[in-house]
Length: 115
Length: 119
Image (tube, rainbow over all chains, first blue to last red; front, side, top):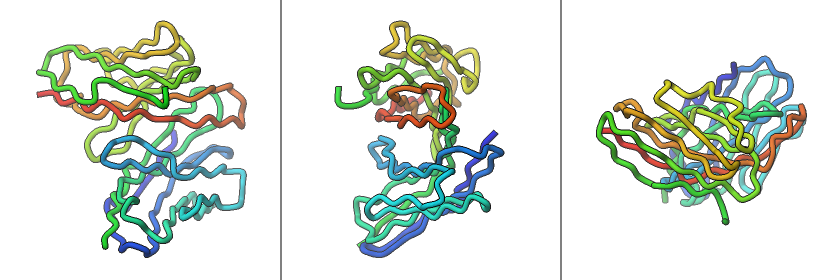
């Protein structure tokens, strides 16, 4: 079974600054996907960024980038130029490819962006 | 529709009542997932449908939980004789296909969830 660990329950960052959210995972699979999801107070889970384990290049999406260290089973999210709208819960998640591709989530990190 | 919808958004039940939570997936999406998110936790998998077939129900916490998707579109999660520990947000997600290929990936699109409070 896979496990996902987020050790930072809460983080705070000032607007326009950079923040890094940590995530580690455990799996015996060699091929898998990793995700960061954002959940604002509206509760809608929004996909922020995705990383495929067989790709060595770190994924980037505008102000969001990841540092994927496969050997260390580490998958951190960096948010640059933080904006007030980035305030939300952030969940790291794991998924095996293929049939019934259920997501395994961490416990989340609450990010507060301040003026 | 534009996205996954769920109803009701909020449900308050007295302990022992039965509840039914509805999920309308994105039209044409083959796969449908239910997750349970307790307060302060990440979502946890409950069950998975491919069209009308329930292929995985390993996450259902007890036999009081039952899900169906009779026509391969709308799904209902039913909880019988609700208990206080059932209080949570119930999230539904759909994806276009889960073809079974080893390297396949299908993005899951989430609904806004139903917040269930059992008194």
